[in-house]
Amino acid sequence: MPRRSFVRSVAALALAACCGGALAQAKPSSIRYVVPYPAGGAADQITRLVAHDAAAILGVPIVIENKGGAAGMIAAETVLQAEPDGATFFVGSNAPIVINQAIYKKMSYDPAKDFIPVAGMGKAPLLLVTRKDLGAADLPALVALGKREDGKLTMGSASSGNITHLAGEHAASQMGFKVTHVPFKGSAPAITSLMGGNIDIMFDALPSCMAQAQAGRIVPLAILDDQRFPQLADVPTARELGFPGLEAAAWFGVMARASTPQPAIEAMNQAINQALQQPALVEKLRRIGAQPMPGSQQEFAGFIDAERKQWMPLAKSLGVQAD
Image (cartoon, rainbow, N blue to C red; front, top):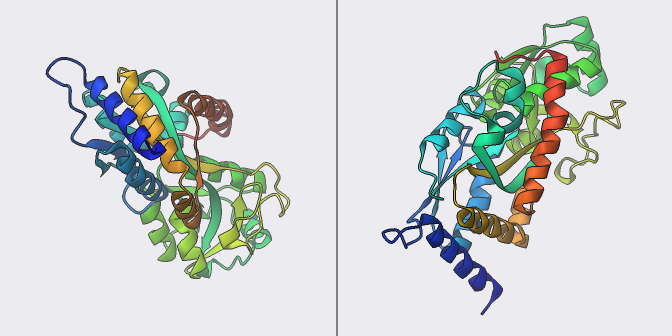
């Protein structure tokens, strides 16, 4: 039996087993991925690409449901209200799984206890971009402007607590100036506002802003990664420009309710990893500015733990609070 067919059969059996009981021997008729941001942003793009191939492997359609708002917490609560039967999953990311705990005084769920990491899907480095008429053609010019107009530059983000918020606050502090934060309900509306001249700068994930940067609608100044990105080869890294350590990425992975049966979790992890091994999908992800995040359930859990250790203390030290 071909490997793909074998994996599909194993995944289907696992999904059927997860339903349990004599009355529920069939696998789910469909699976729902609840995305905590609107359509068009990095989360949505990466999820749709991965879900398309994972659904083919599982032999079950995966429906994408976008539920933006409250830094991903509305979507998280939606999943926690659904039956833990392996038919509903949460697309976790930096904010609802890590950063929110550091900047919100009260949350309706505990990310570490209420969700189980299933599988990583993709991550994308952040890109510092400005509106065309800001008058800062490069990073030194922006830093000079920021210091001269300390606190007056407006910085958009995908939401309060999003990595585009926290990493932006951190980067601005390292560059020596303050910004006025303007949160949006997702990267797509924030970039639209930037192009319209309503905000000044943004530290956005590549899939949400790369096309606009390539088209000249916004000005890319620096990428927050350890190396340049091939599709934006002329854009230097922050390290090259004298700011080592300014590296940040938006990441997205599938999470399940804590009481979801392990067979369903294992089946989903296998399907996503099988999808991420396909060269065509890897190329599609890289084309939009993302990198695949394959790995076991335990490796994804370890990655999230490392993110918590890095970003939660930083959020508290910066005094970042939800707007």
